[in-house]
Image (cartoon, rainbow, N blue to C red):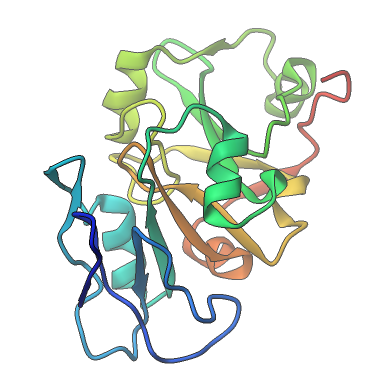
Amino acid sequence: VNTHPTTTRRLQSHRSYPPFQNSIDIGRVISDPTYPFHPAVDIEYNGSMSQTKTNATDTLDALNIPYELFIHERPLTSIEQAAEERGLQTAQIIRSLLFRTSKEGFVMVLMPGPAQVSWSKLRHYLGISRLTTASEVEVLEMTGYERGAVSPLGLHGIIRILGDDGICEHEVVSLGAGIRNAGIIMRRDDLLRAVEIELSDFKDMKG
């Protein structure tokens, strides 16, 4: 465990394996099943202790899937900021969007970068005529995560998960970590192994 001159501490793996080679960025926590230390360490953010273990990271730990937990030094205000600070392209950032399909039914849609969901494509795929965006309260109740921190990993309950084909275009992807101003970076194939995702074209080509 190394201590940076700021209040941020990080755990750095000395085992070199692509694509997370030589990752020493501030706020980056690396989990590797072969690494001799536990992947979760304390990280101080703006003078207070930040949570570094969530249901999302617990799920990956249980599956022995390597990942990086990236904690941003500044509050996130855009997907472009998230991508730049994580050293990724915006298309590698996966957004987890929750929709209400009925009185008690919900579906999560994973979208790459700033791409928007085509409501007509989604309705057609689900075979329904109406759907709405889940409210902030519903997001928390159904996923266990606050809006802006939602992950398809470690969900509270069983939610059907759909994904736009675009999330598979890059070998490395980043998604919600379960806490705000943070993201999990992992291999695409590991994500597909950890989460059952129905892939199709859900992208709004007008956006």
